[in-house]
Image (cartoon, rainbow, N blue to C red; front, side):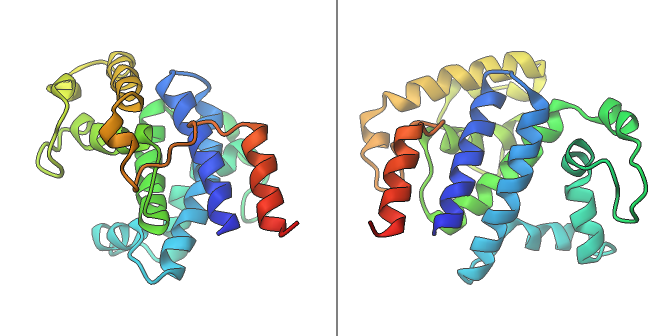
Length: 204
């Protein structure tokens, strides 16, 4: 459970940065770390993680190849050497990276977190609806937000602006905030929250 809370810290910060259109490199690194934790937590709980669906969609990739694919950008940003201890071409990776990649990985990571924790902050719940619509998939989930109509046809910066506005409204939605599946803690958890949780987990 403590490990899953670490993923919540990482994902909350990553999603806030993404929604505010800030620091895509940090978004990718934080999301990558959290995705591994959340995926492990979901599998350990006997639930189906996102990687299960990825394997179905990519039957020619084994587990190691899939892991390398998912961690390609984060590893390049974090580690100067590759799996073979050769220096990475980080510049080549950097110029091929874009913020749409962050949207994909955030969706995967929050999917696993929701499966494992069975709760999420309102911004994450909104994002999980926004993302499929942004990808042009209007049949995956019902869309309760009129603002998300035709979100797939907008530039990413404008689509994020709408996402940010809807997330702000979600925080003010009394029914949503009273739902037991809603994590009411701010998206970026403060040091005060960290101190309270570490005190509780230590049993002091």
